[in-house]
Length: 569
Ligand SMILES: Cc1cc2nc3c(=O)[nH]c(=O)nc-3n(C[C@H](O)[C@H](O)[C@H](O)COP(=O)(O)OP(=O)(O)OC[C@H]3O[C@@H](n4cnc5c(N)ncnc54)[C@H](O)[C@@H]3O)c2cc1C
Image 1: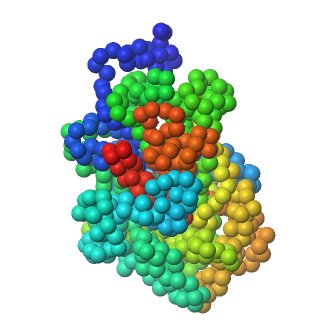
Image 2: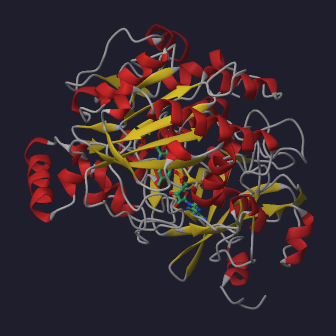
Image 3: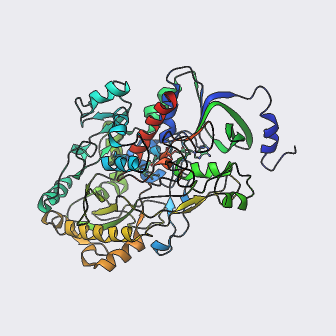
């Protein structure tokens, strides 16, 4: 066999030779899910685990510093920096989609907000035919993940379910992922935010991850000692102390290698050097909602039409690979404020220096926090039976509402923004390979805002924001609105404005979704790829539907449960 353009054909000969490195498990992607699996699957010390990550080290100041989100957001050395195709529902706009390409994956570049989602989300999952994924089934996996930490940095005892955690799952007495209550450190405007809820008779909650997550409240963050506490910090680093775990960075997986429908291992590149690793038990694809379907399609698992268009020999025809893409959209309404906000603390060099010193000396101040500080989960539609809007109040404004923005630049005046995000959109799109070359980004077609229900959600969300902005508490903070003025918009204008300015909240899911059958889904309820042997997908791509809140926590949960499914089938 001759050497192909990228050397893989020659590699195909080599893999049959003795001496190819064999592992029990090969994990593709050291992101949120991959880090959890590396830890759990290696815990016995018996199984050899290889983790392949396309990106490099996460030992970077702006990754570890929570506010550094604004820098990693567009940094090509840690970010895939995807761009979507045009969405007709959004005035044919394309959108910038950051995704982590670094140890820790998107958990190393995200906004650190930790929210499980609503219990009803998981009842939906089970209702779609996924036995074992209802709220009571998945709740223990959240609990074995979260080390609840109070504002002083102490682990909180007696949180609901702690007993359940140890009794049912034999989870660690001290779970690895710090989920911290940062309420006392948040901007003082949180007082007015909670007062607005009281004025409107809306609920307030002190724990978005408790038994009653509905209401206005403050976000909990994945931080420890003022530093980001990513999935890599919580799971991968402890795993790497074990001799049976090997991590390769800058290892870009090109495709899976199959014999018939049995997966044998993976072909990958380090720089220009082709390599192969064998998996004697399983290959687990944890490449995230964009790259997991891409990798399956490159490996011949996907819609036959797409595969043949790119000259890829089909292993299994399944149109659901890359389908069912869901994402959250949000729009921000910006206001000039009557009092100082984070803009004032961070928008000049001397002030940044002061904030920097405070951070370096005490790990305190705005640099130790996310820009997403408080918000809520509320019902906007008159007939809503559960929260249908997620809200954000951010005491900061920057290049407001530009969905194509790739840099975050704070405004020069005191400002804050209000934001809403419909929690359960029904529009769905696709991600498909654009080429048989693994280095070429796939086509991302989110197809945002393409159902009547989603359009109605926008109007309900906009009206709710108007009601909130009209409260006495909010009026005391507003010096003047920044155009477009939320309070002047009629329903049709709310919708037109949303189409013009809404942006992703970076929560793509479901492109390899879990379900009963080939055609409508990609993996079964044990996350095994339908029709293939020794192959699972474990990451945000398997969500049957998008959850009501941020997606990092449920991805961690999915990986925790997957580890049990793999180890105790
Ligand atoms: C800017 C941003 C802000 C966000 N903010 C929040 C937030 O505040 N709270 C929240 O809950 N969620 C947030 N999210 C979403 C959340 O972080 C993700 O849903 C979650 O991290 C997804 O985990 P994953 O394991 O599916 O994928 P990822 O964590 O993205 O991991 C996939 C990994 O696979 C690697 N990979 C991909 N392809 C290959 C290949 N071919 N070969 C080798 N390696 C490969 C990638 O480099 C990456 O490291 C945010 C996301 C972004 C991008």
